[in-house]
Every structure is written in C-alpha cells, then in structure tokens.
Length: 94
Picture 1 (tube, rainbow, N blue to C red):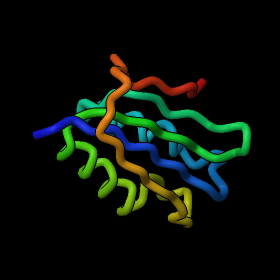
Picture 2 (cartoon, one colour; picture 1 turned 60 degrees about the vertical axis):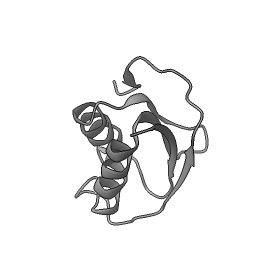
Picture 3 (tube, rainbow, N blue to C red; picture 1 turned 180 degrees about the horizontal axis):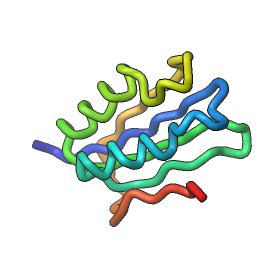
Picture 4 (tube, helix red, strand yellow; picture 1 turned 180 degrees about the vertical axis):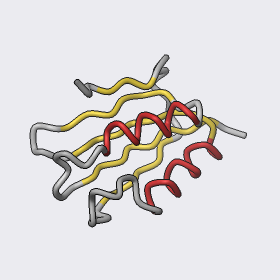
C-alpha cells in the first residue's frame, strides 16, 4: 500500500464549528501527518500524508460530516503521490 498526500480545502462558515479539532483528532487516530489551519481567506486547509487507505477513510469521515455544528459540506480534495515528510499532525487550535 502506497503513501499519498491529500490537500483538502473547506469553505463556508467554519468559525466555531470544531472542524480543526475533529479533523486533527481523526487524522491522529488514522496515523496521518501534516497540518490543519485556517487560511487568511477564512477557509480551513488540511494537508495530510499517510497510507492511501487511511487517507480514503479520512475523506469518508469528511463526507459523513466532520462537525454537527456545521450544516454545509463544501470541500475540495486533491491527491498527490509526492510526499513532504511531515512528522506529526499539527493544528493552530488555541
């Protein structure tokens, strides 16, 4: 099973929805590495690397709804074969 990298971008009302917390928690559970942050444009960006199967499970988690506090499901996912080599899954959650 190959390792992959995924770039996921969420748009919509992301303030106070817990997205970064839930994305980080699920990513760590799946052994993914990378980062989750809020962009200057107010979107949430997640870049994760790991086993292809774990990334697909992560995307299924997103499809099922990350946070009950958010009603929207606007996101894009791009997959890459090249890895950056992250060593942990970080988030800027305060």
